[in-house]
Image (cartoon, rainbow, N blue to C red; front, side, top):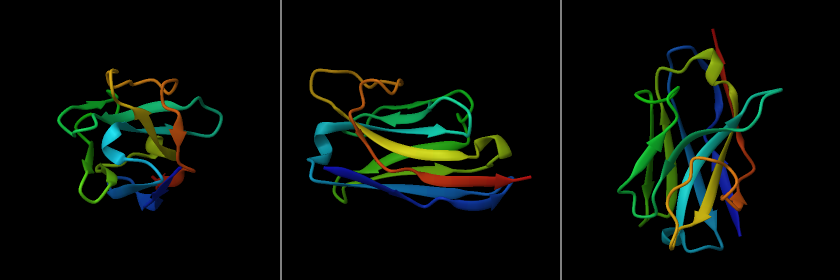
Length: 125
């Protein structure tokens, strides 16, 4: 079971990137999905989450209105569209999966038990 995150890179302030997370070895629709990020010297923080059906989404206040999380259950892919990027968005971005049945979507990392390897986003000023 693994999650493969991709799409990170170097972008100027105000630019856009789209991150992709592709799972293997799990039934995608059984899991709520989320993106977290961790900047150097800082704790891992919540970015966005989406319910297993895609009907509900959740965002950290610092990215609300700039980032959009979505999932394509037919293609078994999770996305994070990031617009109006700022230098403070620079971090390693991780996708994560949480077993969905009987539980609500979490915005904290604890319940997520499957993690990708991270993809680095660097925003220059």
